[in-house]
Every structure is written in C-alpha cells, then in structure tokens.
Length: 254
Image 1 (cartoon, rainbow, N blue to C red):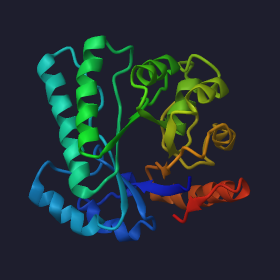
Image 2 (image 1 turned 180 degrees about the horizontal axis):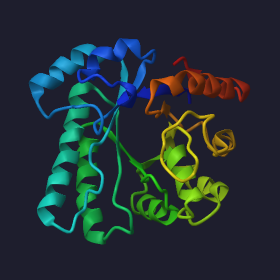
Image 3 (image 1 turned 135 degrees about the vertical axis):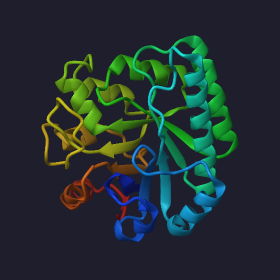
C-alpha cells in the first residue's frame, strides 16, 4: 500500500480556514473540527467544498467524551458524531477520526456506538478510533476487541504522553506490537512525554522512527503531520519523507 502524507488544519489560524487550502502544500488534509469551524449547514458546506474539492480529505471529530452521566449530553454527542458522518459524505472525506471516553465502555454504550458505525458504513465513510492524549493501552484494547472491523489511529504524541506519564500500562514496543494489525492511520507529532504539545517530530523524547519501524506499512494509508504551528511542519515533513525513502516505503508526494 502507498502511504499518503498529509497535514491537519490545526495550523491554519484564520477564521475562514478553508480559503487557505492551496497554501498548505499538501494534497492530503485532515479537517479538525475542534479547531476549524465546520458548521452543520448545507450552504456553508457547499461553500467549503468549492475550496477543498480535489483534496484527499478526512475529518477529525469535534466530539471528545461522547458518553456522559447526563443522558441528554450523551444523545447530543451521538447526534454530532452522526452529523459528522454526513459532513464527510458531503465533502467527500473518506475517514472520520473520533475519540472516546477514558475507561472501559459499558456494553450498552457499545451497542449505541455500533449503530453509528452501521450508519457510517451505509454512507461509505470509514470511522477510525484514536486514543486520548494520555494513551492507556487497556482502553484501546477493549475498543478494538469489541469492534473487530474498526481501524485504529496511532497518535505518536499520545503514545509518548501516556508512556511518559506512567499511564500506558506497558512498554511502547509491546503496545505497538499489539495494535499493529489494526493501525491504518498515524498522527505524527512529538512531545516531552508529559504534555501533548503537538511539536515537530524532532522536538521531543519519542523515538518516532523506532515506533514506525514496528508498524505494518502494508496497512497504513495516511500519516498526518499533526503539529499546532506551521513552523514545525517543514522539518517534520522532511524527516518523515527521508525515513520513508530510507525504508523504501511507497508514499505519495506530500
């Protein structure tokens, strides 16, 4: 499989972020709804589509902890997640990346989540699960075991943060070995292991090359450079491309 290298819209600081797609220097873009306004409005989405057409898009959900102790909030979060599937369909985005609550999810909540997954399949949108900013291996295993067809997003920064804060629950190599057959998408950044800084790949304590060495690149479709600041992108892009070339991993030009 050829790996596509992309960028997040987090680095665009302007309110009308969609007007700056051509300046990103990437054909693969992940729209982050937590940072980039993407309203549930057909007129607005059609306007956005005029700027994003021709790009290989994915969307990062604006939801965080979907299941809440206050039931109306849970229903609202599930409705948002479902609406985001429609947003992906309208914009032509192939993947929707989402987070879940920390902890082991109840059987009832898994049933409710399965209904959302069924709808996404019907609409041709692939949903991909990403662990939270302090990655806990046990929580990831539980979700992946419960949903055998669900793809996993390995966030390098979250992995380093979970390990550095003593929350991962195992060695990094062990975790990667356990999720490598489910990992189809990577968020690439680095940090000090204590906070999710979203820094450049060479600006942190994680041996990111060593982690990528453990992955099965025949399964990975996209690596998204998930930096918060544009200044960190160019060096990270260069380092990542050099790594892929050195390992003779087929990739699409960024």
